Image (cartoon, rainbow, N blue to C red; front, side):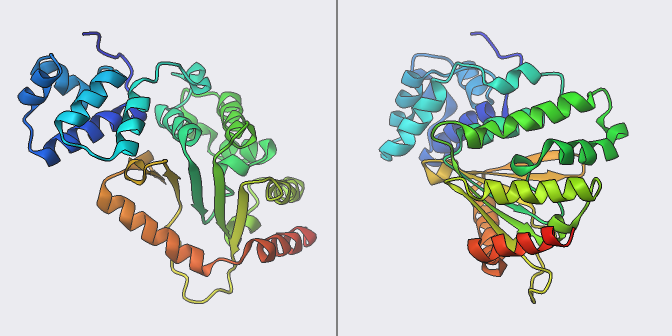
Length: 283
């Protein structure tokens, strides 16, 4: 059995889901492996994401676990059959691996729901805004080149520009709209870009103004990526030391509740466009 030298978050997630289904069914690792003609060591590597399982064996394992949700089984088999390398792999070892995992998450998502409090969402940033943002912390990039980091983020935007893109709903706090990582010209161009992006089919931008009372979601920045099967949803959250990916049932419920709270505080899409226009007019 060939073991992977690089394990992505998406591959780890597949293994984790198979393990969760097995444990929920009360099937031992030895019995599960025997059911598909392999040994327990093989299954351990599969559940850790260290080896490929293949679509056929993924289906056999799901059958052994008594999974009756056909949509879930199809989704797991489809993920197990993936072999192609995404565009982000050309950046391997050139930027942090969690950024590659984020690009892969976005690319395969059915829909994307973003909350940003102090930054414009990465998928909606202009190149000049990116340069100002990353240039400010250039020393923290370590061995990674600023131009490479910016080029990678620019290419991430392709997920919204391709044929059949995921729907994207972004809730942005007024603080992010008024922050100026660069100068006034960069800030104005960024707001214009947001307005243009909001005209795209499937892209919705909503704003939480400063004047909204009762909003205490200052630490709620996140990206909620939905799958065709809800149990395969994933939440990505930036933190001081990188990026975290969460998918346990209780975690998904917690972040869905956070999304709902922020959504209730946000202006509607049309009012949000008018709001962004007003801020742009002040520059």
